[in-house]
View 1 (cartoon, rainbow, N blue to C red):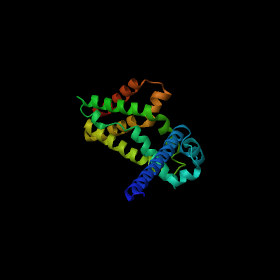
View 2 (cartoon, rainbow, N blue to C red):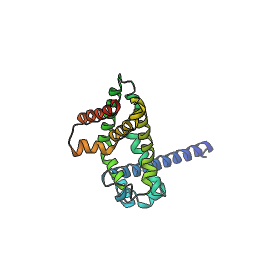
View 3 (cartoon, helix red, strand yellow):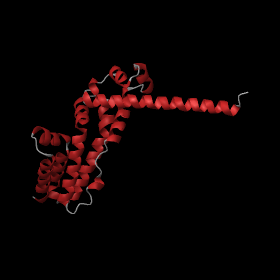
View 4 (cartoon, one colour):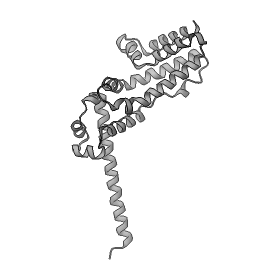
Length: 206
């Protein structure tokens, strides 16, 4: 005679295995999407290519992510979890304004070097993939705006040149600025940081 307790334990075990398998499948789909977004970009990533890379059927992808926006959100969360944004605490203890600005830019430029393929593809495809801006870039843009305002406050510029300092800080923090200096003009990361720090300092003290 099979006990009720044993039968219940068996059902619980089978359910646990099923949940684990579903979680693993969802993870494979998410990681496949991240890989494709970082190589070919979101606009060129198809459900078929995701399914093939993840080793599942197209229907399985749709079952886990009924809408592509949901899949992109999972991909974005997964990617940023593994590539965390620069932490403001890492530069707020600097001895001087110049030191804090320099450290902030050094952190951001190291971050950009790490996420360049993904960020390049996402920014390129944003105009043709409607949900990218809302799901993938809005939170980062908000974070970047907060950092810019924080650094401008750190500079404590007088009212008459605050606009110039804000423009210099936002320009220095931009991904496109890093690409221009480091990739297009082949400056070292250190040289790019020093150049942009000097620009901000010049705007601050003019």
